[in-house]
Image 1 (cartoon, helix red, strand yellow):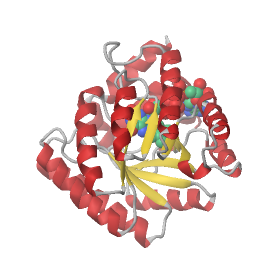
Image 2 (cartoon, helix red, strand yellow):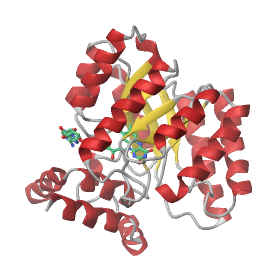
Image 3 (tube, rainbow, N blue to C red):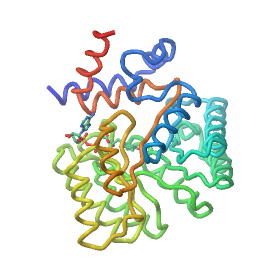
Image 4 (tube, rainbow, N blue to C red):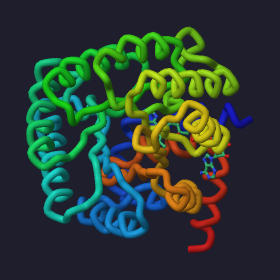
Length: 305
Ligand code: FAD
């Protein structure tokens, strides 16, 4: 049943027609629990509140299905504005983005041009940029672009997904670049030909990747809401004397906020991923797919209103 619900929401997340409809109807149906408003102003308020609680942030201007150079240019300008606002408002925030928003599906030249523009601006203001990882089809391309950019910029990192068979090899190959990596379980619907179908294998792979990257001496963001993985990381750090400034935990805005504060209180760096923007639909559907309990929570909210 849970798997059927998951597949259903992942299917909905890729529906272009529903994405358009959602843009028209605004942040209704509970999406506001996971998305910090539709504008940068909304995001700035949320970031400030989180910073006041001692939490670090990475903001993400939501956007998917970019198919023209103009749209990619528009998304790039949004990133530039976000970087400037982070600087002006003195926020403790990084920026996350998706290469498809910057034109990955149009051409490599375009995405490189847009990324160079963003990274130069970000470097000037000391803002770190993380390239989110999207579906398997785009994984190899994303890693290759990351490698090119990392040769010229030290303020860029990317994400690797524990559910993919290829990731162990990727992490080894990338080690030569001393990358700052965010490690996650993986949020897209992938076939058993490329990804572990069973949760237990994904969890084992996640632990293995955390260990590999930390013991290679590289900065690691462990992005999960899973206590089992968090406790594993804490113990690993003690056993191997890994300093606390070599890793951080990350969680999504609206998910386990009490746990976020608790980890901060324990002295760990805790970063919250704060998405904002009009294009919230695909992101919201992936959150529902991860945890059908979220659907019940949101339905209760609608009934209460
Ligand atoms: P799950 O297996 O989903 O959950 C494990 C346990 O966590 C649950 O059993 C429960 O105990 C607890 N939990 C989970 N959700 C809740 C909740 N709502 N309330 C209470 N407890 C809960 N994926 C990508 O593919 N690419 C990316 O670039 C990417 N970036 C991310 C950035 C961040 C900061 C985070 C946190 C996730 C990102 N993801 C990304 C999503 C990720 O791949 C997973 O889909 C998502 O994090 C859910 O997996 P999980 O590790 O939390 O574990």
